[in-house]
Amino acid sequence: MAEQPQYALRMRMPFAQPEAAATLNLLLTADRFQNWFGRSIRRFGMTSSQYNMLRILRGESQPMPSLEIADRMAQVVPSITGLIDRLKNQELATWHRCLEDRRIESVELTTQTVQPLAEIDEPDTAMHCQLIGHLSGTERNELSRLQEKARESLCAEES
Image (cartoon, rainbow, N blue to C red; front, side, top):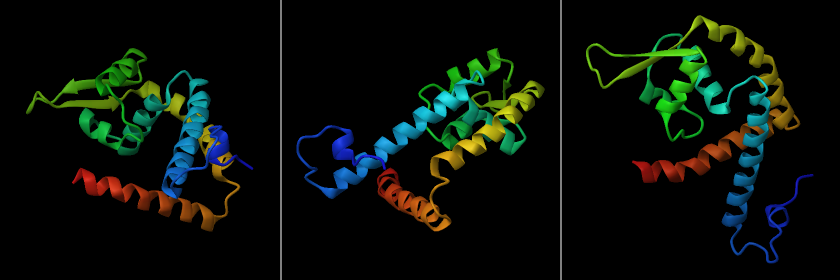
């Protein structure tokens, strides 16, 4: 069983608020999952952000504006342009300016992207099963529901 956040962080005193314990527990889990996922994806020569962008583009199967991709990323990427440049240098994506509005840059996959993504699909599915496959279907649904509910406080602030 995983340690409670108080012990994982080697705190001498318990949390003053249960909200703090729950938040840190969520952050610890997210950090460990992200690190594990990042190591898994690096075996294929890309970062989790690169993989995320390629999955978004594959799902749309058409060129997309770079800022729309940035909005759909699972994690905030400080420089979407730098990420696109790295994919371009690896010949996994191309980008071009919109003729109607030169401020808009569209990104699309190259034909060379199909094979690397196909190689990652099965290990990606297995990784998700390894991380939370021990939870029942009801528990997975409840976990998702609670995380969505927790994010509602941020949605209220952002609007």
